Amino acid sequence: MGGMIELDRRHPLAVDLKSFGRRPGTMESGELTVPTPSGVGTEVMQVPEGSEMDLDLRLESLVDGVLASGTVHAVAEGSCVRCLRELTEPVEVDFQVLYVWPGGKNDPEAEPVDPETQEDVRELDGDLLDLVPAIRDAVVPTFPFQPVCTPDCPGLCDRCGEPLADDPDHGHEEIDPRWSALADLR
Ligand SMILES: [Zn+2]
Ligand SMILES: [Zn+2]
Image (cartoon, rainbow, N blue to C red; front, side, top):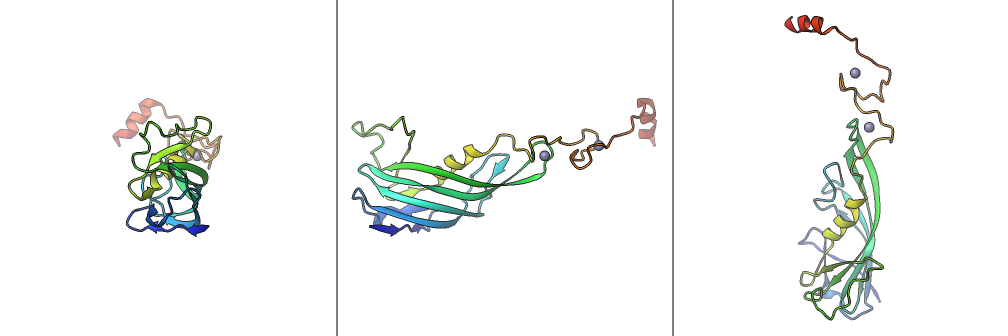
């Protein structure tokens, strides 16, 4: 009963459901390696567009749509907000989204979203199941607002800009401001 998932190559990351049975109970699963779509990240941390992303994906046909669930594996890049050192962080995050058939989401007789499971609900674009928003919504909230290389990163020296972690004891000679003005003249 389980088929293999094939991506629609005309879209960055979408499954064409034309060949996918609408009969409840139909299931497909697969492990896919795909180029990361754009926008999977924040200002300070992101999975670079085009870098390899592994997806364990499972699609299950339900009465009112298709339940997509799985795990995203990728590597995020960013920089420490204190010392600007480059960071790479492995990403492993689960997602579960119910894609309802077009028109189903606004159907007053449709089952409401279960507040217990907080299941994410999206509407299918025709026969196209676009995974990009689901992946963004799963991955981006796992990133810290203020990534740091180590929790006690001392940041940069405010005099010379060197990372203090490299040379914690370094200091700068205090120069009398009057002498400093003379030095500037030279
Ligand atoms: Zn740092
Ligand atoms: Zn310094």
